[in-house]
Image (cartoon, rainbow, N blue to C red):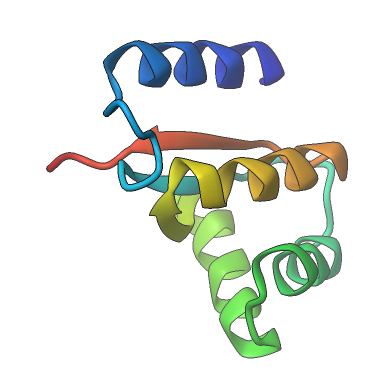
Amino acid sequence: MKHHLHTDVAVWEQTGTSSGTDFPCQLIVWNDDVNTFDWVIETLVEVCGHTYEQAEQCAWIIHTKGKYAVKQGSYEELKPMCDAITERGIQATLEVTAT
């Protein structure tokens, strides 16, 4: 998945705005059969600043839908969060939001 993330980032950098700070993105977390609900919830609270309830709702949506945009913002804001999530063994990507 890390390779896929780098591909998405490369495409964004080629087509993004010159400043790169206000281009709208979504931080997508993907379902897997490895990580527990508790680990995903803890990660969303610590990395994304979600409340426990928000993180729990996100975890259920990820589980049932296969993926979920857990946070929206600029590339600059979301990239470190995406990296922190993947470093914890949870699959995450950044996607450019259609404008």
